[in-house]
Image (cartoon, rainbow, N blue to C red; front, side, top):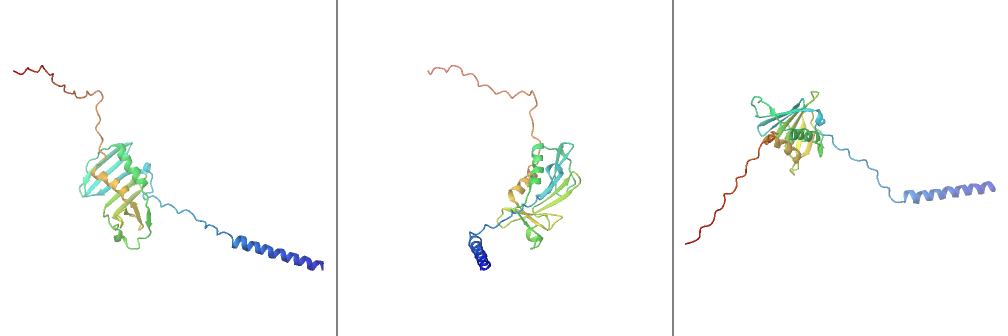
Length: 212
């Protein structure tokens, strides 16, 4: 009898545990699904500003070449298809800005493999611009700038070594292409000790003659 009683007690305990599990786990509040953060797309260029040695921008039938060698910035601006023209000293601040902006380019969206074909995005050949980048250890990266997205918020870009389409904010690309119209020409500085132009003094006012 005692053994039967123990079996009954054990069975009752198992039933109670099962009931508690059902109500507190299965019937309890829904558990929030665990989500992993969406990985941020990689930068377009894949080079740090300090790793860039030369940038060549082809746009608007012009070619802007910007280079850094031995801590000296130089630039040249030629018409497309013309033999390379002589380089001149460039303003360091905007020149460094070009390298930094290029290194910071990051797509907001990546269309892997261009399912609609490269011409659909205007990146089978340079539609808007081509940007050639040379790294300090002879890395070569060519970025083809194609057409705009339907809402005109992004340009479609493609690295020449890939068929993936990169959507990059219009403002970021337009800021780079603007240097073709306004290259980094050094700003004139006043010579030390140069005298400021004299301000002409007003002519002395004499006595007003009395009316007759």
